[in-house]
Image 1: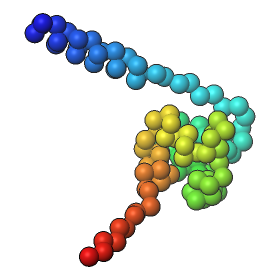
Image 2 (image 1 turned 180 degrees about the horizontal axis):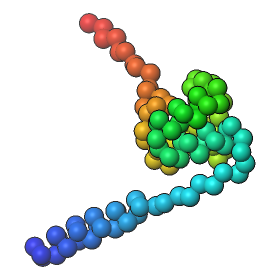
Image 3 (image 1 turned 90 degrees about the vertical axis):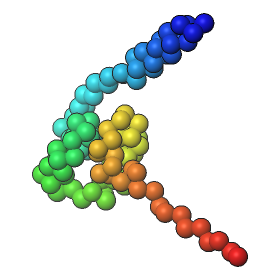
Length: 104
């Protein structure tokens, strides 16, 4: 029994790693500014995204509020597909602070 537990734990660890290694391939549908921005998101490279925004004269706030990638808001898209660096740049992890008032 003692030797069976490490084997089961190892098997579960290997299976969970294999499940997480899903790769997606994104293909640009056209050459629009919106598509270029979405493709820059898929690089997960903040500097690349900034370069595309500058080159096309786009502002971050406008992009965050209006661009959709794969029919999702750009922030949700970046978070769902694991583009964490870009998601942070877009402000996904910046939740409004909740201040609790404690009455005595």
